[in-house]
Image 1 (cartoon, rainbow, N blue to C red):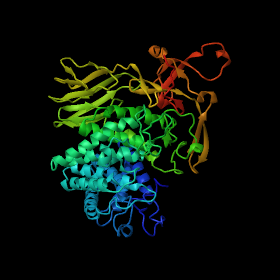
Image 2: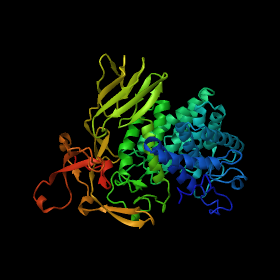
Image 3: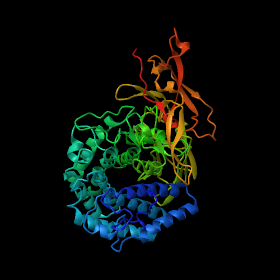
Image 4: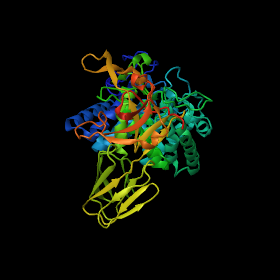
Length: 597
């Protein structure tokens, strides 16, 4: 079990471990368990019980107890590490150290924090000594060098906390990566490649996770080396500006496993695979882009990924996820490839996407409400509650809403002190925001949102209405998708699920999804005149029903169905079709062909 091998504690790998051949992709267990731990602990931090929190405490305490005498926290024993830099160690350490940092802060756990600080000190000392070996030799199969760059996230976090040595090392590691001889599947985040006119083309998760690295380094060293920081920030900006050419209508990057091939434009066809790891990592990169650089469209991208691509890729009964998903998908079977079916592990391909699927919700929720010098910003809308400290006061912010299935967000604010301001983001799809605030409030609308300030009562509710109109989005080849507000809609293809593999001792299975009605495999054609008459039909919206299983509203549009039907002979073939949020589908047509005017 890659996620249950306790590889950071008693299951640490060495010459005498179960993994005898440590050179044969030894880091996979650390990737799988590290990402799973991260997502699991974050979910329990948000909604867990006391018993579940105690279980996280125990697991992380076991990792801390297994720390090496020199402070090392990772998945390899001293014998394996002795010869020097070990490919994959930086990657897997970035996972486990990230979990320890978040949990120690959440629990105010001094012992765990001390383990983290000792581990970080050991990492900084060792990496500084081994820098010449980092990214030096190609790995024949693993492509782990691109993942190893993620250790910069750990170093940059330490740099933000005032560790100047870690910040300098973050820059040194990126310099080493930037100068390394990397293959095209790993080199998209090198400065020369970021600044080139060539589209992204490498391994999808590498592309999106490493895009943030020069920006994070720029932030870490800005006070010490502003000229270098500016070079790095410009490199990131160049990459960000061309990112959109590789994204589909749900915001996900084509990544099956690569974005493309060298010297070819990116081609995010609606049928192309989108990897769940890349969905999660792109959301995180976009949040850093919003926080550090204020990058245009960054928060809209996060919202699009979370409410559309991420929901479309998960089984609606929580029994697994797709490793690859597509905006237009008429089947999801193992026969298409080990990454296309619905699985709780995908261990016949790689145990990366399912654990990473567990990280995206905490990533999004943590970034929904952000404290700044002026007060609080609501970056992302949804039923989220946070307690923050501002100017010494404890302020509770609660979004009371069914968004994205409701256009009204009631932002409840309790304990706001004098001088506090509430900033509400305006999504790009909303022409304006309608705000009803407390008596005497000052409401100022700007280009990117609304600021509410004034003499706050002890408890106040700011009612925000987001006018959600229907619009069209277009795929790279010109096909049309319909969207309303933050949701992208698709024509559902009802699916039959068939178990193709079982997991002894559980009710979990790998499942193939095939169309219940094979005639639905052919897409309907939109009529250009009917796009002006799209209707929203409410289906009631019962509160006890999961809206991702039974959406409270659908879009109705007139189309021509190409499937042969006796009733269409001699007729126009026009019919009303229903479109549902893509996240409510397993199989679907999202980007539809349309007839010319």
